[in-house]
Image 1 (tube, one colour):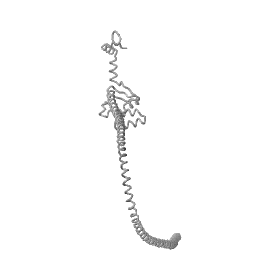
Image 2 (cartoon, rainbow, N blue to C red; image 1 turned 60 degrees about the vertical axis):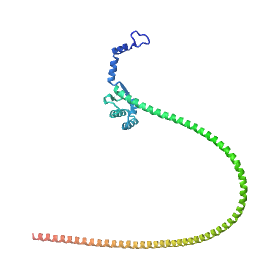
Image 3 (cartoon, one colour; image 1 turned 135 degrees about the vertical axis):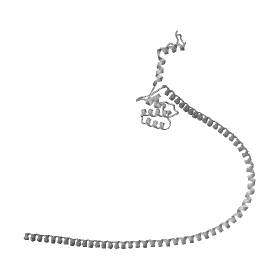
Image 4 (cartoon, helix red, strand yellow; image 1 turned 30 degrees about the horizontal axis):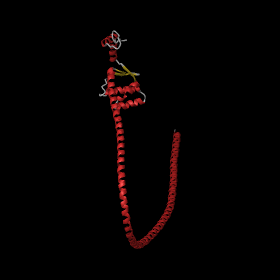
Length: 309
């Protein structure tokens, strides 16, 4: 408890008395001790979410990945190491520490981070203000443009109405002139139509005769082309049928020759196997005969030796 003044009158604050009381009570020393230690302590999640906006570059990407995995302890280590590695942050390594559950910050670190956070928030506020002012100015511009368009529409409507009245008056005079000119023009037209009718009949007859001659020539050409086409198709069909017959005959003869070759090859193989078998039999008989002769000669020699002994 601290008294604001020695005599305790209301609404009087004695600065010197309050300072002495705080000094004698040890409040200033406690504040100094707190400033020399880690006076600010935050949870991992709270500290990361509070200072994540100050991260930049690769640190920001790694931080977002750790936050997505809900590993706020690793995220706090990455965040503050990024502050130390960033020369623009100005954070010293011994002014912070990350524990198992809390983030410890010294007063210098708190001041640096608070200044950076304030600057970031101020820049963000400026961006928001600029965007909002842009939106307001755009709204005002749209309102002014709509008003100008309405004024232009009214002015153009007035000019159009005046022009329409002048055109109506002009149209009446034009109609009278048209009636008189039309009467004289119709008379001339009757004479011209009679002459044109004759000329058209002659031109149409000439065109009809010319078109008939062209149609006859085209018909003859189409008939010639059709006859050539039919003839070519028939020849093509004959050639295709002949090719099919040749292909079938060649296939038949080829299969026949192939069967004869296979039969001859099988006969040769059988003859060769028989010759090989007979040759092996003769060779075996010779070998057996030689061994028998050797055995007989060896037995006679033993008998002779026994009789001599």
